[in-house]
Length: 310
Image (cartoon, rainbow, N blue to C red; front, side, top):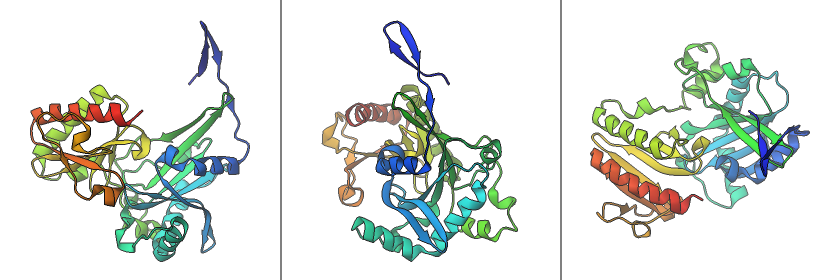
């Protein structure tokens, strides 16, 4: 990918700049963790049982811990190391919760954490073909993020997506006790998980997704345990709407605004009670039961996009 700056009618190449130190990348990422990944920073260099976690973070939308590792060595196994970190988390839940409470000054209870949504992010300048192929599983709670820095002061974080996700990690790792134990507690969800026996709801969802892509081509789909999120950036950051799947309908939960904040001529949008207290942001809801409801919902989502996402 060639990048240029525009000067009048001329293009000047933007050259990639080498990231000299792994620690520099870690500090830069930690200082901007919410901006980059939409995560809450907890601490750096968290150590337990002879394993050191570079960055410990928390996903406030999924209510789950996220472990971030920065790598310069290209010879490591993303699967083995990723599952070792997840096993450390699951075997020491009380210590991780204590660390969260002490660092943030808030009270997080064990039962309020969704341990099934735990995941590991590896961040590096580049990954080998072998490492990229190692994440080709539909249920792997591990993400690879490449970082490029440029001489104009720009830095790019891009997630490497799996090419083929039809195979389950559990089918090829039956003799690996660590992977089997973690897999029994951690789960990666996909869209199909939400539509078992809900054909009508699936048709509505497909219609909604197609029309959203028509007005926002780069929108990202992020299945989680209790919802499917549509976000404006990768990794579920800048979520425009959460879609809850009911038997014959969809329920849209839209963060950042109350019904009175937007134009709702039909009065279909309702305020989600206690959303500010539980999510630290107002949330509004809208049910979709037909194609006409989808068209109306798009007028609401357009307003949210224009007003709250600059």
